[in-house]
Length: 248
Image 1 (tube, rainbow, N blue to C red):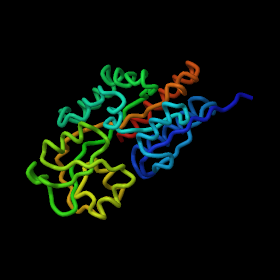
Image 2 (image 1 turned 135 degrees about the horizontal axis):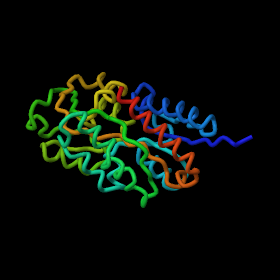
Image 3 (image 1 turned 45 degrees about the horizontal axis):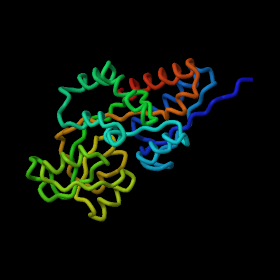
């Protein structure tokens, strides 16, 4: 009887989130493609730590896979900063062409020297500002406002340039920080705004769609190298199918 290989995937999103649902779909596809030889076990909602912690667990081989925002990945792989440039894509199709094409494929392998291999990009929509007390209609509206940003130098510099005061707080602690007034607002995509229930605290969501930072599904290079060529094919195929499913 062949031994079943179990891959563990930890991430910070709520189980209602489209990206989590995509990873559930990936688990189903992986099991089907490998006829039960490979299984994927999910640890959602930050059970194993925030994005940075999960990446570090991948690097030392204590966790197999994680989903992180490309903005967090830029701390490890500087080239990922490009995805945090505001208004870099003409439209959704343009961004999909980049993620699915040659550029995307190259970006996914750039992390090898940091022991992190990208498998696929998940569409994380576009990010917009949301606030507790007022709408953001023009850059001046951000003046003096404390805005939560991801651990990304690009995000920090964007909010600075718009006149706001950027503050890094991990996604899991943001609800309380908004509630207690540690920050005046944040920026994120609509699914995250909704599934995190930040709308209970922030009554103003201003659809400026300043960035379209993708999510990246990452596997630790240790884990990747332990897989046979056939297993790698199954993992890659299940990941890519789940990315298309997630867009729906």
